[in-house]
Length: 402
Ligand code: NAP
Ligand code: MG
Image (cartoon, rainbow, N blue to C red):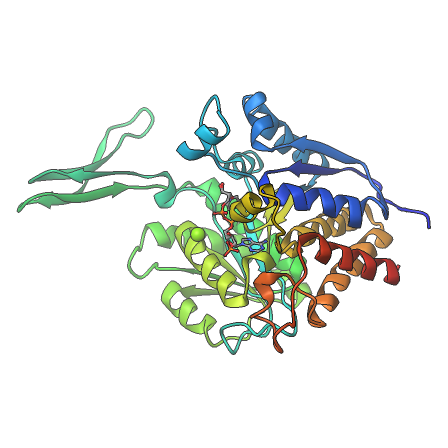
C-alpha cells in the first residue's frame, strides 16, 4: 500500500515519562506506516530542555508559527523535586506557558465522547468545549498580607502624566490581605478572536460568561471587548448557523448542568482553570480529553490535556505492565493531521485522521479499553488492555479500514 502524502510539515514536540513512551508507539504503529509526512522534530523532554537552556522550547514555538500546525507530547513542568530528580541547571519555566506566550494563544479543551460512557451529568449529550483565557488576572498578580492597620491604595501614573490614586481599603482593626491584578486590552481581544475562530471552525454556539454586575469595570471591560469582536463577525456567525450569548458566570454554571452541551464556553482565566477540570471529570477520564492552543493568526498546536502520567511511568521503569490510556494523545495527532489536511486542501489526509479516530472510538464502543475506562463503560468491560496492547488493537482495526 502506498503512503498518503502530506504536503506541508507538521511540527512535532516530544515530551516526558509515560507519554513519551506512548508517543513513540503512536508514531511507529499508527502514523508513519501510513503517512509520508515531514515531521519537524523538537525534543522537549526535560533532559534536552536542560541541555539547551530551554532554547528548544522557543525554537519549537517559532517553528509552529512558521508551519502553523504542531502536535505536542505532555511535558514535565519542573519543581524542586524534579530539579533533584533530573539534576537540572535551573528550574525551567512551564513549556506550555512559553509556547502560549510566544503564540499568544488560547487553549481549548474538548472531551472525546463515546456511546458507552455516560457523562456524570445526565443532560450532557454533546461535548462541552472550554476556551480558557490564559493570560493575567490572579495568575499575574501581586498580593500581600497587610500586617496591621493602615491604608492601601492603587496608583496609576500615565506615561508623561500626573499620578492618579484610587483607594482600595482602610484597615482599621488589624490587617488582612490585598491583591492587585490586571489584564490588557490586546490580550482580551485576541482571546475573543481565538474563541470566535474556534467556534466557527467547530460550528458550535459561543458562550462567554463573567460577573460584570459586581465587577462593573474589570469584568465589564471583558464583556464589552468580547461583544465588540463578536459584532464584527456577525455575518460569519449567521453563515455558520451559530449564535453568541453573554451570561453571568453563575447563570452559565446553572445552565450548563441542564444543557445537552455542544457549545464553546469561553472563560476568564480562573473560571477556565476550575471549570475545565469539572467538565473533564464530568465526561469521564483525563485520558479522554484533548486540548488545542489556537493563536489569533491561525496557528494550531494539539496535545492531550493530561500530564506525563508519572505514576504509570515509575511502574513501567520497574518492569511492571501498565495500562495507560493513549486516546487523548492519539487524538492530538489526528487533530494536527486533520488541520494540516484542511489547510493544505488535501482531503485524503483529513480522511486518514477520521479513519484513525473512528478505529479508536469503535474499539472502545465494543468494550476494548484501558484500565481507567473499565468501570466507566456500560456495560462494564470484561477486562482491559495494557498500554501497548490497546495501541496494537487500534493498529489492527485501522489497517482493516484502509
Ligand atoms: P497526570 O499526568 O495528569 O496524571 C495524574 C493521574 O491521572 C495519573 O496518575 C492517573 O491516575 C490519571 N491519568 C492521567 N492521564 C491518564 C491516562 N492517559 N491514562 C490513565 N490514567 C491517567 O499528572 P501527574 O502524574 O501528577 O503529573 C506528571 C507531570 O505532568 C508533572 O510533572 C506535570 O508538570 C506534568 N503536566 C504536564 C501537562 C502538559 O504537558 N500539558 C499537563 C499537566 C501536568 P492513576 O494514578 O489513578 O492511574
Ligand atoms: Mg485546573
